[in-house]
Image (cartoon, rainbow over all chains, first blue to last red; front, side, top):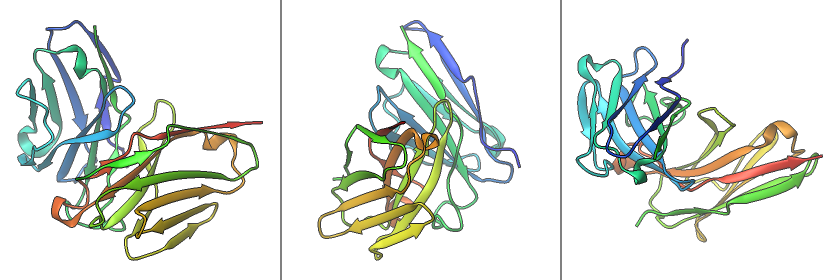
Length: 118
Length: 113
């Protein structure tokens, strides 16, 4: 079974540019999550998709961030325009169930995309 | 509010036990987790504990939960160089869905000969 795949693994862009991160969840996982770790701090929840619908986007920092999951398969997270404080590691995760307990519906994380805004 | 605190760094000698500590503020959490992140890799779920348990053991890993003090610890017995990684403590709540996790900043474990 292929795991959660994220692309690119690294991205270096200048302030004001646009970057799009992609996440391919495990096949059959309806639930997809984006998390972010900024500057060695805690990992923070950004948003949760159930299929193509945004279930919870309470963690999105501002309207420069746009997440989509057309067709309920892969997801993209676009940052436009990027600012210095957006630098960090963006993790995607998927699970079969959303409200299941970890013993039957754990989160599977990708390796993350390291974003550097200069 | 939701807040998870961890010490940032721990150094141990190979073969010794490691103890990584975590404190949290919200006592309504249902599950508490330990994730491991090796260099260049994603987050790997190491173990978790249900909030009505005090202890959970899984091979070299022992998780202790003190709900009164809101303190969670992870003990790694016979620490090996392959255990060098960042360890994240996390909690979840039924109201948020169990996969909306609140993480700490991570503890970097360095194992030296």
